[in-house]
Image 1: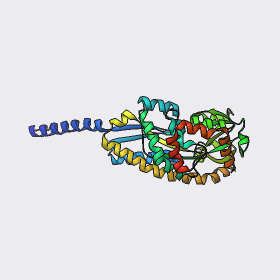
Image 2 (image 1 turned 120 degrees about the vertical axis):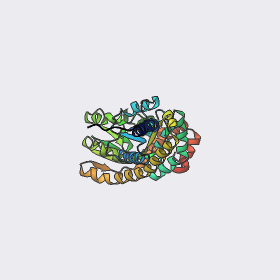
Image 3 (image 1 turned 30 degrees about the vertical axis):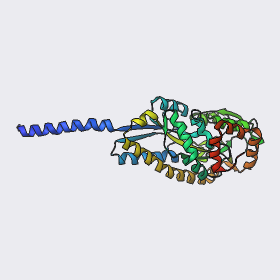
Length: 337
């Protein structure tokens, strides 16, 4: 049996189809897909909170903004991702300030050894005038930084061979540092045999004794399972590290204003949640890692800071950063050296 379609029904259907076709291209033109890569594991507080932010952004935009998170160096190691971010091959990444400093030297200002006594002191500096100067320098490279830096925490020293209690214990010690000029400088100034290795290759390097030790926040030590290849941990708190959320500059400029506002506000709000979650994890990890067989020590940090002063570390980096940025830092930390 056939059903006749009246002229009115045909015209109504045609109009509806035309309207649908008109809406789809408009939606497609407004839809923003943002792929964000990072080197941290899926269960790290940074990755977890990025996924929370991504869902909030997608829900608030009714699917127009799709922030996709790729942890575990799925899009390449930090050096590779940073290159792709600059070229526009990817839209966004989360990167440690110490590694970003290979491109933006002032990004390492918060990595000055023993500068901060608490994470809150670091957040104050980076949310304020110190961060303003760094963000301006990031913009000059064709990248755009979200305002709030995310927390990776204080870095601690681990070893498979011995406990690090004094600066002398580092003399000749084979330690991995990230591909960061200031990290390399700090440990060379303390007499260590420091080697730069990307995070994606770190576990294997420790397992095969290419290096005997490394330094990372407890959160990274735990989520990267470094306790399986490292026996000792010295709670030196020698460097605070944050994670910048960066976007390709031209891509950011091309986003609709309402998408920019939603992405920036959501990520900056989630940064506060991430900071709290990361510090909560950090506070619990000494006990957890001890139960898993790691042996902890709390050395006298002032001895390490004195060794850095004597080696000229602080003078060197003060000259590199320049008086305005160094003064902004000391306005939060007090005099360093």
